[in-house]
Length: 242
Ligand SMILES: [Zn+2]
Image (tube, rainbow, N blue to C red):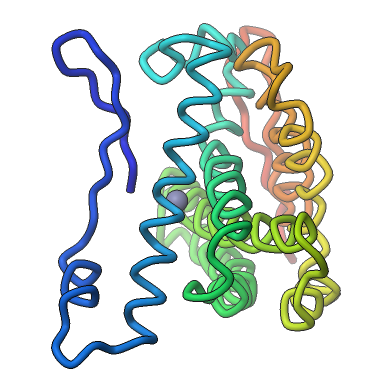
């Protein structure tokens, strides 16, 4: 990961690499496949650094300001909490795909996340209806699974658009995107691509809230309906399943 850290008043991106990456680079005898993966991972993290640089040049110390500053509505804060990392992963992977052609297996990551998240949420919903778990536990399952599938979606869409920047997306990537089961997730692509195209002219960090629109659609597809109450709070409506 590549967190932003303030030290002596200066914000810098720090790369945090797991021991497996370092081990892959120094392994004796060298394992070319492991080296390619390690290089691609480091490249991906450096992609985050580029994104930090773009955002800092437009918004200053964006990462250290409260969420309410750019998303005053609580419903936007809720949706942003589910989807904010989608852009980060898309952007980092679109950048690295232009430089490193192999090493990350975004298709497998995406397909495995896509194929389980709905079932896990529906299973938790049944448990909620049988009063085996609380509403808070259910919403936690929703948040964890939506975040995971959007993480994988960011990786794959970044790969797809990165490959398109320099030629044609590979057949494997195209097949994963064309699958009917990917439709809700591919819906994020136009919003992400537009943010990318406008990266020199982002006017406010609030521009990224456009990701909340397909996020709300995704929740509706799961029959989860977050609503804004009159007092500004968030109410989640869950129609009864018979
Ligand atoms: Zn990342």
